[in-house]
Image (cartoon, rainbow over all chains, first blue to last red; front, side):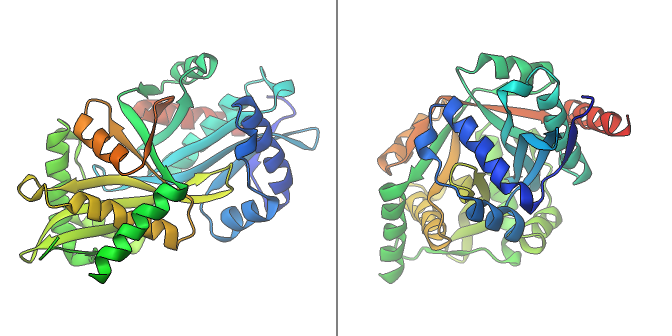
Length: 166
Length: 166
């Protein structure tokens, strides 16, 4: 990884990080779902500290990022790290930058005393799945993700308010 | 839900919450994986604020709980809620307590300005999957979970340390 630096992101990186988030969304055929702005990212990451980000830099340009947050294991009774995104812009692939980024997040996990680093991968993304398994991670295909959002979430919240007023 | 109260947990509930975590682990055939203690839970939840908990109480006994933490969506640019555990002790099922707890967490999500509430479910747990779908949640079976833990995590962290010393 000569000439490539991996470092914690700073507020000034938010514009480039957002551009890379959009690239990732396009790869996942989900461009229309990106509503983040630079200001929203800055507030969440650098003011509310809801996520941490490492960036990869080459030729004074941010070319990849890994964004993580904390999750919680009740069995362990404490937080672990959860890798939300790992992305390297296509022109810079094949230089071990993805490995460098995920290993940096793993080091953060160990430094924080976490016992696990978790993430998810799209089931059709075989190159990424192979990459993760080579790194020693194991798949947990017995878990199915669920989501309540939009009207469904508002309705559930409304049921709770009604019950508390009974 | 006459005679049943849903309220935020207090530090004094940690013993009962741990007992219910152990019950849940037994149901998932994972009892041996519970290493949490009351002190560990107390520190994570009430000192480091890494999770929030609502409990259901009847006859002055905590009989169920919902534990959530924050996750992060880079597409939205901000945090959402993630429901880690939802559990009601078997003797008290069929009273709508699970619904009451998940709706309380949904209300928390809405009050915090979150757009999503996410969670996972074991694929063989059809009663729970039916329950979630009735509530308006949708499954995301195209995501596969990955985990690096133990020696694999330490090795990844070690690769990062070696590279940074180059």
